[in-house]
Amino acid sequence: MPMSGHMPILPFVVPFSAAFLLMIFGRTDLALRRALALGATVLTLVSAIGLVMVAGDGAIHVYRLGNWPAPYGIVLVADRLSAIMVALTAVLALPVLLAAISTGMDGRGHFHALLQLQFAGLMGAFLTGDLFNLFVCFEILLLASYTMLVHGGGPERSRAGLAYVILNLTGSSLFLIALGLIYGTLGTLNLADLAEVLPRVAPADQALARTALALLIAVFLLKAAVLPLSFWLPNVYPAATAPIAALFAVMTKVGIYAILRVSSGGLDAAPFTADLLKPWLPALGAATIAVGAIGALAARRFGVLVANLVLVSTGTLIVAVATGGPEPVAAALFYLPHTTLATAGLFLLGAAIAGERGTLADTIEKGPLLADRVVPGAAFLTLGIAVCGAPPLSGFLGKLMLMQSVSTGPIAPWYWAALLITGLVVALVLSRAASAFFWEPTRPLVAEEAGEVPPRRAPAAMVAAIAMLAAAGPLLTIFAAPVSAYMRAAAAQLEQRQSYGNAVVGAPVQRERRP
Image (cartoon, rainbow, N blue to C red):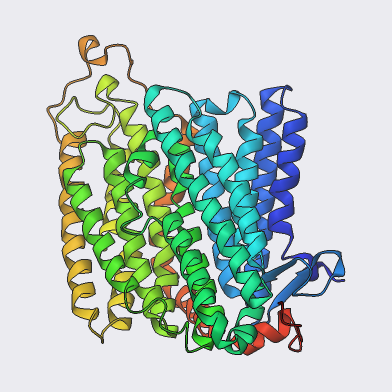
């Protein structure tokens, strides 16, 4: 097999192997662990870029573990969509790791091993070709995220961690129940096989199959934090340390990816599942945008504000995904990396600013002038313009594409209004935060204000991490033409279910009906 034939598995194998090695060397010198983690993360990024290039030829690249054929064996499938998500995760991973190293939080326990394990779980979720292994990858990334969330201790993190664990254990239980029902009624869990099997479901089993798929979608909506299953996110994300919150920015996108993959892979193939999403999901997406905007307005801490911006981006993406079709999906795919990297950058920037404000931390209230304003101010301006969707950066281009693609139907006027009003609201709340952080009298932080938390400037590694994420908006704008072309090609490829099925499964598999 040529090297390109192994590309689908490399983004998973590299961090998973690194996690294994870091677990073994967990008690060794911290510098060695950092070097191993950085090397693995850079190698993962290189393999992800290679995967994007390989998938760009339009072929569906399938890696069969143990050479067992689908739908019976485990397969990893790399098309343009999975390559985009893998590359996004790898691009985010490097600044997250640099930020974690800069804070010194990586010296405790098996931090680096767990972080690499979370990277591996994310990569596996985007590459797997069947629902059961999607469940397995969900559990891998969630197992790591439970520990990462409470890393550093404290009552706020403990409360958030307890709620997060209970919520996700409930979601995992429902996921497993849905998988059992789907396999019992359809006889397969392979994503490529769904389109082939769904039209042949007996009328007596259609209600049960529809219920199972609806339960599966509900689990994905919980992971994506779509209203009314979004109540947990504004409390959980700000409780985590900034590097982990930045990484969590991509975790809601796993749920959105799963909905897109399942809906494009087979729900439209049978009449009894064709309308499973469109009657209600766009409305929930628009409502999620509104709730996120209200939460951002009410936020008193910058971390809570950014967490609500994650909700806004989730709702924005869900409407386009639920609307379906090449144009809305292409617009969503262009908007997705922009919003993920911008919100991740804001989480890190909030931590850098909080470090210079003593006990005020990231509270949005008047305080002393920051000792270092140039770099944080430039990053705030860049990320703020990007995340509110103002021209000329990628946020404006993404929203414009979304509005053009969702221009008909009953949801269109509500969606347009939500995007326009929310852009204004986000600009307002970020301006309010900027005035509290940057536009105060020119005086240093005095000892009484510092309290028990002395002010500190952001380390160079944290500044570098923020700069990387802030640069994403201008870069996406400069390379908007090739990036949008790749996204349109990915959306068009999703419509070619027959090609996907032929590449993964081959000829339709004949199954005996279970009693």
